[in-house]
Each structure stands twice: as C-alpha cells, then as structure tokens.
Image (tube, rainbow, N blue to C red):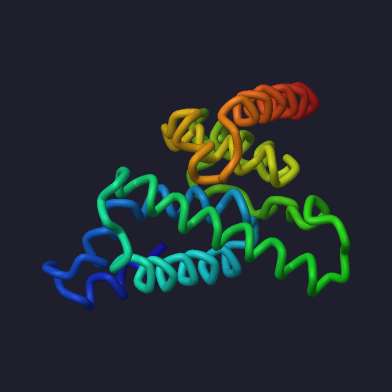
Amino acid sequence: MPLIESAAGGLGTDQPLAKVLRMHAGMIGRIASAFEADPAAREDLSQEIGLRLWRALPSFRGDGSLAAFVATIAHHVGVEWVAKAVKQRGSSNIDDCHHLTDSAPEPDANTQRLQQRARLLRAIQQLPLGLSEVMVLTLEGFSQNEIAGMLGVQSNLIAVRAHRAREHIKQYLEQI
C-alpha cells in the first residue's frame, strides 16, 4: 500500500490517521487482497479504505478495539467495491464478481512460505463473498463474536460460514 503509506507520512507522525494507517497497513492490504486480485485496482481499493477511515476515524469512541474498527471499515468498503463491480458488469449475483488472481509470479516465489500464502489467497478469492469475508477476518485474528458484530449477524452463523469456508479452501487446495 505505498500510496496510503505515503499519504499517511505526509500528514505527520502526530496525526491519528497516519498512525492508524501505519499500524494497520498490513491488515488493510490483506483485506483489500481478498476483495480484489488486480494489483492496480487493489491499490485503488486500499486508497478508498484509507479515505473512508479518514472520514470515520472521528466517530471512533473506543468501545471496541481499533483493529476491529479498521477491519469493519475495510470490510464494508470491500463489499461495496465488489457490489459496484457487479453492477458495472451487469451481473445479478455478487458471488460472480470474485476476480481470478493475478497470474504474474511473486517476485520471491522460490520460497515455500510465499507460495503457500499465494495459494491460500487464491483459494480465499474463489470463495463466495459471505465465506471469504469471514475467512479474511478470522485470519486477521478476530474472534467469532467480533466478526459477528462487524458483519451484523449471529455468532453461530459465523461458525457455520467459517466451517464451510475451510471446507471449500481444503477442496480448492487439493485440486491445485
């Protein structure tokens, strides 16, 4: 997320947005990656998340964790991003909008860890939106209850979606 980081750096180190963007840049990038495979479009999505955080940050009261607040904003922007792409494509099914992963090889693809991460990301990108959002937030370390609060659904639904997502990912990884 070089553009967000450079924008944050231009604000000065004492600015709340700059601190939030620096602290959560990795999570924002991973959430954006789950919604957008194209690197240029992913950068645009990351910028949109940064803009929404700038607008929403004054409303953060500290009721929950800052990470959950940032993830919620990033998630909602990602969902809107997908919905907008669906509308532009003329599709009626939001799950049809998950893009295929970028086919360009990773610069350091020779390491097994990077290859595993890339396969997992491709598997998550293939999931229907309802499953991918739960999996991304789970991998970010949020609890089932926190995810339920972010998505506005019951906690037991998160458990069901997480189980289904893991099953889909397992099947996808076995096929490649």
